[in-house]
Image (spheres, rainbow, N blue to C red):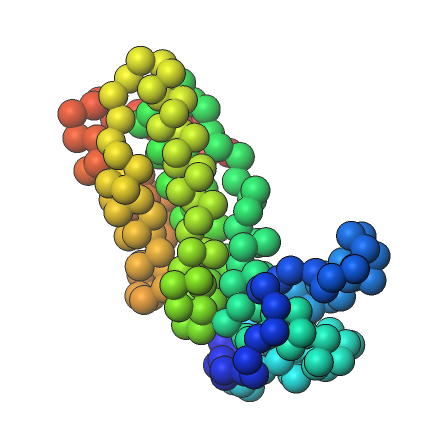
Length: 207
């Protein structure tokens, strides 16, 4: 996995298009090229430092363009991670809170088991600080909130969103990022069993 080096001070909002840019025009093409370059570089095992000039060269744009739009490697990685993890999951609807969470945990475990996804998560957490952490898990909380809201609409009781995040998202990320242990589907579902110990277990089929 590529190491990450700090970059020059930023001059505008992270990931925000420059004033006067046209959505879908050159600004969108630059963003797509830079995002693609970042994903390729963090997945590269060469060990080269990830810097703005290196990203710009891979993307085929001027380094000043990247500095002006993102300002630092940390903010750039956070923007790439936000784009990668936003809308990537279909919130499951199995008919029960346990079933929804078991399916969700299994899907998340599979996603974090992908080497390219894991490389992006590690690079973002390593360089982006709180912003990077928010980029990697912000949409996860929104998805879990939707699961809880659906269960409440069914009339069922639910844990708090914070408790659910601590019991489900945190151990999945910890095992993926800081250990070499496998993210097995059975282990991910066992997290739900420990969270909801008073319910009879349900085993939805993998899809």
